[in-house]
Image 1 (cartoon, rainbow, N blue to C red):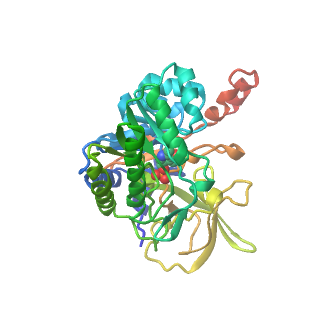
Image 2 (spheres, rainbow, N blue to C red; image 1 turned 90 degrees about the vertical axis):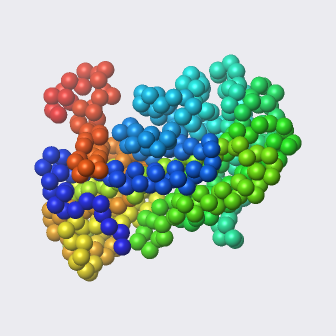
Image 3 (cartoon, rainbow, N blue to C red; image 1 turned 120 degrees about the vertical axis):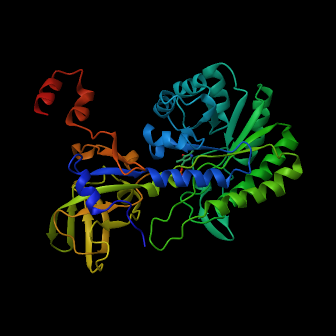
Length: 424
Ligand SMILES: *Cc1c(COP(=O)(O)O)cnc(C)c1O
């Protein structure tokens, strides 16, 4: 049973101040999970989680993670700027980007962020851009083929645009060493949203073995191994949640079996989790505003794919709770839809739910990562507010909703802008 962390009564109170739709985040859940992650990797002296900013780029939420020692993983200049504005020091910032513009490398270097190169040609590109090779540098690895655990295929790195091939890792580390790099990192992201405790341990063993070879053959010091993101969450009620303690133990075992005997017991383990850190602790709360009885039964809500794109983009499942009707039988079959002029703007298709009435509040689950962040403005729709449900039960606004003026802002150098603002 998936349970919402808000009730109908709470939402009725909150909507007196903040109208639907909005994303709301659960501080207590975020804290408990971050603490569990920290404990699961406490065996590793240099362990650090660099939260993947792209998943939930809100400084107030990232600040909660800072209490547990987390840094940030940035994929662009604006994410770097956000981290810097928060006062996060360079050594707590990872820059894992691809197809990287020169100015973004330059800015990352200026902040002292750790640069994780996506391609062997980026060695020259970086050196030409900033004039030197940083002492600490990381390379992203992509072994190609399929990533499998016990014969079951998890993902298809051979089809992914990211990373160096195995040969390029050896060649790249040689070049970087000649150019003065001293402290090397290896990064890989080979499967996404894995709902198994075996992904990290399997990936770690593969990277640890590579690290030993790189150390022996190229003579470089490997300072850290970055397992990146990819730990999933149980979106569907029948999914079994990952156990981060077992995952930490599995990585520990591989560490003791591969790195320690090679005299590499000082390697720091890094992670760049996004989904695992935040997804379950966010709901998109929306209100039923229409019902439609045609070839199917439709419930129209006041949110749309602009607020949560994953169902439209990937056909992703997001669980739905009709607030106040948690105990009613799910005996109605609905498509729950938004208002975009796009037929894929559906939060659920043929979903069995309790009977929904106009005015019912609906919590769409697991929107805390890759939810608000993927939002866009199609059909002139505005992005919603983000709220934080604090541990003490109070609710705090952590991002206001967009206004028409925000939508029009990029016309501010044109005459028509004044009229748009008068209208809004
Ligand atoms: C997206 C991304 C992450 C986070 O992935 P999750 O699936 O949210 O854990 C981490 N690192 C990199 C480089 C990414 O692109």
